[in-house]
Length: 629
Image (tube, rainbow, N blue to C red; front, side, top):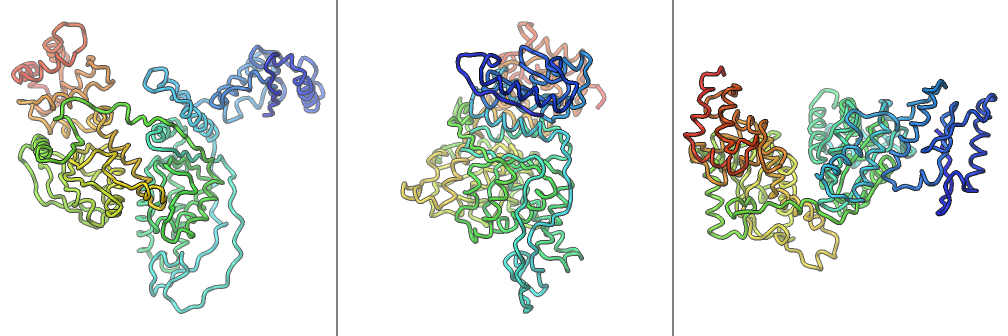
């Protein structure tokens, strides 16, 4: 497609502008060169498109059509296609129609359409910065429609020295070691850098709470790609290392260099997903840093498309890390294959919907005095009901993680801060905890400084893992999230401590994890048996009923419709009778009992009145007593 754009003119219509005339003539000349039979009938006028070719993919746009905000660019181009389609319908043939990927329709709508629908529904606040980022994601989503990666093997990366079997470990191949006495091979010329041959990805970075993860979720959901993967970067690197360990133990590893093994892993992962959506792209460990360039060179050369979110620009990745020069060549590669965009939003949306209410509903409890410690114990007792398994263990990648207390009938665990952050645990350990327990108690989180740098780093990684798994966290801390990590102005200005930078994200996440929205989603994500096992239905507290309300008011409307009410009754029936077969007659009877004013909806007062009277609950479900399980 060829697009001519007239220069902007503030006072005249595009079709009347003097600057438009040469472009119109150029349009006609180009048409004439492509079809000798073209004449004035080859151009059709339109109210939305001044000139549209019948014979060629050629569009003439005046400045009034083009000078729109960047976020409307794709919508303008798609609307521009409509008049051409209308001309084709009149009898002209347009073999190019629909060929441009940007014109292809996406089932359910592209990212921008989905974003605007949420905006129109009042679910979001209008944010021009987010709209610009969404326009870029929308553009990429349309560019990958119909894209097929080449899948050709990597050839451009510099060969690495094979690892000698006598020692040095896996990473010695990257450092030029290996423990052997053989002389090093002659230096080889550095290959030319890779350049994109397919759609260029996108690297979105900005401060905490700017909506990066939310926008990534919209993009991933909308992307019309079968082989796609959306994952936290920590988890992805764990997967990479697990695959490397597996290959090392295989027979093929005996003759393969470390570089070759990384390439094998990249090729294996490329076969599973070529659209990679990374949340929280960050590099904190040298073991990850030294293999980044090699693994991504293989992915990019085979046609992978990467979309990533991060709190920092590419230049600041692995800042002040050990042996950072080994990592630096990855940065220009990343920028070549991904457009870098600074979101720059000023609003932290996680701070908008912070939960409030009575003190006994708090999940972040501070300060950490005797009353607060007792409150945490009461919350633990409410969930575990005295059935506790002490000193159990959780296994992750062959390592055992001590769990001081675990509930017998529910996936709830209790840790002290020291259990999780004073020991040499890492992301894989914390992800195992998050996967094993839907609710985690953390007692006695102290005030932190750079004197406890290791503990700070582990706590940041811990909260990331729990947040990503939507785990409910109940903790006591000496201070609120903002002041929990105490840093002097001199330390902040120093700029050499990654923990100071990363703490902003932790503050934002700890705040969001207290919000009604987060807690509601955590409750709704649990299976019925897990959720109901937390409660004694015969004696529900106010806190119990409010937590149950969050689960069943799925649209956050402040009332239960009949579908939401049925879901609640089926959960109660399963807990009481062991099955979910609620008959229509039983449901109608329960609805009449609960909906006191017969208006077809259930208010919180009606919900509370019903659940406070166990005899009423039991009798209303009696009609389903003998339903088959």
